Length: 110
Image (cartoon, rainbow, N blue to C red; front, side, top):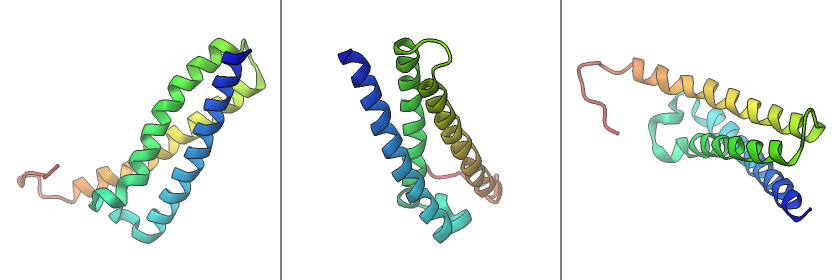
């Protein structure tokens, strides 16, 4: 029972941090739009969300071991994880568009 509570607690904490990262990302996108990736500081909420999505992948595996089958909590967490993945992928397209505007013959600084 203790392990189940730990997994549920970790999932709840991850969802909280995802909500914070999404809110920060929304603010940065509203403020900077396509310029989101021009500086590391501007892109930090995106990087945070990307990292949290990876953490959610690991938590989803732990949750699937704890819960069997089509449990509602497992399905809901899976849906949240998929939504985070979709946001990361979609916003990541801005990074690709920004790179396409760069002269291909000029080295890009990392």
